[in-house]
Length: 227
Image (cartoon, rainbow, N blue to C red; front, side, top):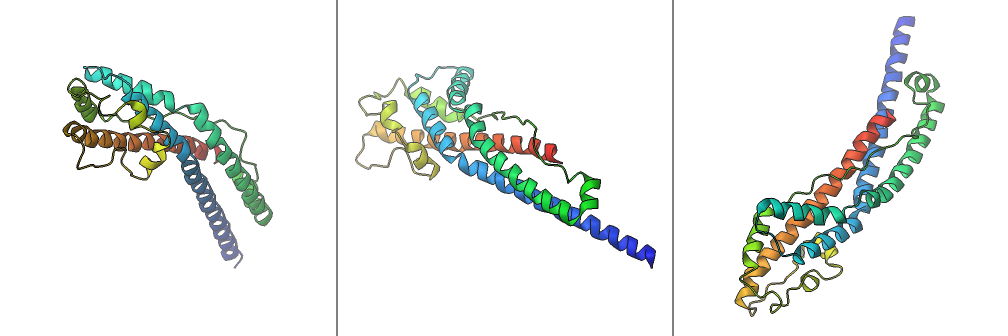
């Protein structure tokens, strides 16, 4: 009977720890999602700046040079310091919630908390903000490069500022085209518009994906630190 009670107590204790770990993971995942949401304006601004930067450039002939230019332009918009300023607020809020949760667990299960180290506060560690790779819509940029010498962009009203107006990043995140379809537009504009819209959509997706991967990378490190 005593042995059965001991086994039951052990199972209950293991179950309590398992439930705690599951709840802790839910808290971390929640703040990971919040960080991505809170970076929406940052992404919109980065998309806008990167697009305007590419539209303002005379694209080089070689593929490697197009990619190098693209990486330079996008990299200038994706500041790790700026991302950390946003992510760190969420991480601090997450740690406060985790520690309140750990305090409650330590009160309810003091022996298990001591045994598993869950009576210790989470925090006091560093974590990286490492900008992840931004994919390049190379095929369409090469098509754009080929059109550069064939079309009078200024006559079409396609300067960088006109094509990429202020605030368009938020619109692109909602799936709205930069250049709207116009049946009465010139032949050249009808050639350019679908290409510009496609590049804009690809860059919006690739930049978003890079920022989200940066968040995931940081939280992966944080998960290991709080174990």
